[in-house]
Length: 403
Image 1 (spheres, one colour):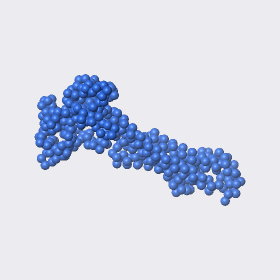
Image 2 (cartoon, rainbow, N blue to C red):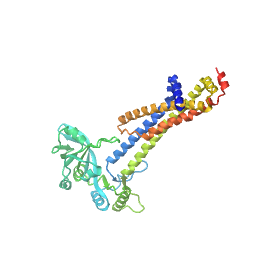
Image 3 (cartoon, rainbow, N blue to C red):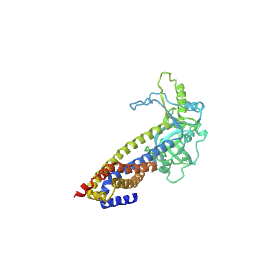
Image 4 (tube, rainbow, N blue to C red):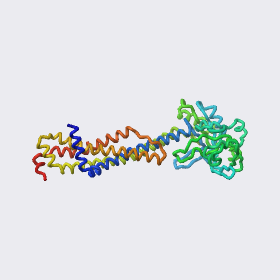
């Protein structure tokens, strides 16, 4: 019986193919928009998490000064960080994997007739562990080079390509301002981040050489602290704050004159923002499903009116009220499911194109697809019930008299 009802419903839909297509267009757009938005949103969230993770595992960053609510900062007036702070963190914070100083400045690197503006970072070998960097060719800094502040440098893949092309730069020299720097190694590529920065565009050199020959001061701009996975970043952050307050002689009732940033918290915040935006956009797109449902109800009411005589004949020859109700309800569900199926295909296609354009991962969620399909069926049931009930409650004699 159900198979026959479905066959009749498909026949009714195909008899008015263009009208049926226009009817389900709202459902198609709604389902496609929801799936596309959620899929691209999940890809963006995964990209943000990957970018934050690429900065380093369980990474904390210590900076001088405090950021205010208005966007200002007290970094200019706060006491600077020093290499002694780096040494203290290494010895007094438990579970530390790496503690790396970081002072940086944009400079133009020159090799023969080639030049390239890049970020020069003064640091030490622990920077590699803290940031999850690897040496592709060459080596890291010797301890003697770090102690003496030798003009040695490790290139990122971008300046290596711009300055040396496909050649091997290890052993060659480049000029940074008035400094001649010998290349001792090349970093493995990490690629571009979704924050719009090229993670490969940097040159590393010993912090003492950077401070003495480039910055002209002994300050440290920032300290990276990486802790083992068994230590909670929250616990490590609290220990860092206590140590820095003690070293910087911050009184019990005084505000910190430094900041400790937890990358896990930053990742959670950014993920939360992308999730909220995805939810809002999906909610707006979901309104199209309601509009599509209203369109289905409207067309089914028109169909009931057009087929009044047919309904009267069916009731006169013995069809029950339940059978008529089921027939028109199935027609509405078939329309909405057809729209749902087309919407899923279109939504996945749009999501794939969007992921390629935005350069994020294409991560379709089977649960979202299933929910969208189920919701489209629910739209057919909910908005098709009233027209179907109206058809089932017709008086057979009045229906037969209808012209």
